[in-house]
Length: 323
Image (tube, rainbow, N blue to C red; front, top):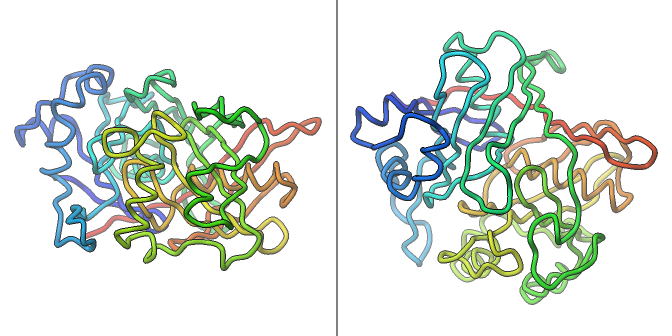
C-alpha cells in the first residue's frame, strides 16, 4: 500500500518498487535503470498511486492528491536509492520535503535508525545522477525530525543552465518581468536542483497560491518553469523551480513557490534553501539559522559561511502520515 506523508503542506506518496510491480507498473530492479527508462513507466505510477480529482483550472489540468511520488527504497540497507516523480511524470534531482518524507517512511519501517545517505536517481542531462544527501535523525526545538545536509550551493545562470544571461549576481529574467514589473531582480541558485529566486521589495509583490492556480498566470509560469514539451525551456532548457522572496525581520524571509513539474506548492524544502541562499547573497540575512516562511509552514535553514563564502546549506524537516 502506498503511504502518504505531509511535510509543511507538501504531500508525497511513498511506494516501493515491489508494490508498483504488483500493481502492474514495470519498474526495473535498479534505481539507475528505473531513472533511465522512466518514460515507459513513471506516468503509469502517478496514475496508479496518486489519482486525481476535478480540475481547479479552466485548462482542465489534472489535480492530484499529492505533490509527487517517491519510489524506493531499492535496497534493504543504507545507503538507500530512490526516485522522485513529479505529477507530470518527470523526475526531480532533489526535494527537501520529499527526502524528509522518505526518511520518515524509512524510520517508520525500522530501516533508518541512524544517519545515512539517500541517493536520488534522475534523468536530467545537466547534473550527475544520483544526487546524494546526508540525513541525520535529530530533535530540534523538542520536535523529532531530520537535518538534511544539502551541500554547497552554486550561483548564477551557468549553474542552472540559463540561456543568454551571463552574470553570477541578481539579474533580470525578462520572462518574469514581463508578467510583473516587480519581478525584475532574480538570483539563480543550484542546490542539487535548479532554482530562480525573485527578490521583491514588499510582501505585496509576492504572488499567492490562489493567483498562481488561475489559468492565465499558471500558464505563464508553467512556460517558464517547466521543461519542454510542457514548458518553453526559457530561460532554462531543463526547466527551473521558481520562488519569490520578500524580506521580513532579521534572518526571516517570506516566500512563495512554483515548482517545475508541479506548479504552485504550499512549501518546498530545497526552495526554502534556495531562498535563504539568495537572501544571504543579497545581504538580507546573516549566516546561521534562517527562517523561510511559506504558506505550508516555516522551514529552518542553516547557512555555514567561511571567509565570506557560503560553504553549505542544511534543512530541518518533519513529516506526518496522512490517512
